[in-house]
Amino acid sequence: MMTATLKEKWEKYRETCPEMKLYALVDGLQYERHFDDALTYLEGANNPLFRQFPDAEIAFAGPWLFDMSQAQAWEDKFLRLESAAPAVSWLYSTLSLDTLTRHLESHLNIRLKTGKTALLRFYDPRVLHQIPHIFTPEQLIQFTKDIEEWRYQLDNHHHVVKGTPS
Image (cartoon, rainbow, N blue to C red; front, side, top):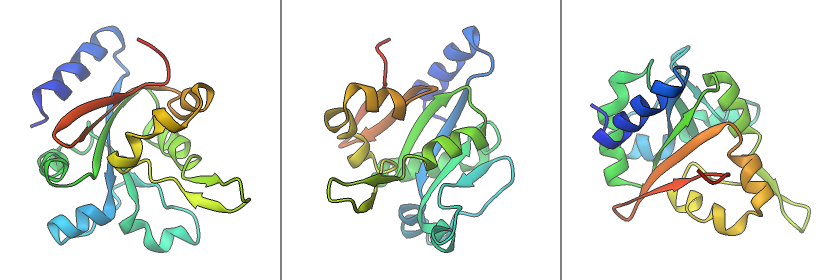
């Protein structure tokens, strides 16, 4: 069962916006290390964010987005993983699973000042926690576009990332 906070928040959003969905963004490598089992694709329930060549070869170890209305069997494992490792965050959005996946995919690679490309591991709560401090307000708004709220746990504290004020 989802934590009371997540479930209550989702129900509250759905009162005013019935199409609001709750998603879990999960670090596949942390999941595999914790449960000794790899995440697998279930059409309509989840998407790996490493879907394009050459990253698709290591999709199991990358970030995975789960539509929690279609993936309820995973809830308990995600909550246990969240308590054990910086590996899970929760997103409230009206976007479809595929649309939100594409949005998040578009932010995985960033261009450094040197011209090189780097992986932005925003699916790791330790990195997600720093994003509001390193992004410009405009970048943060673009990054969280169409995401009502992005919750995560870090060092036993709950945090929220939003691009626009409530």
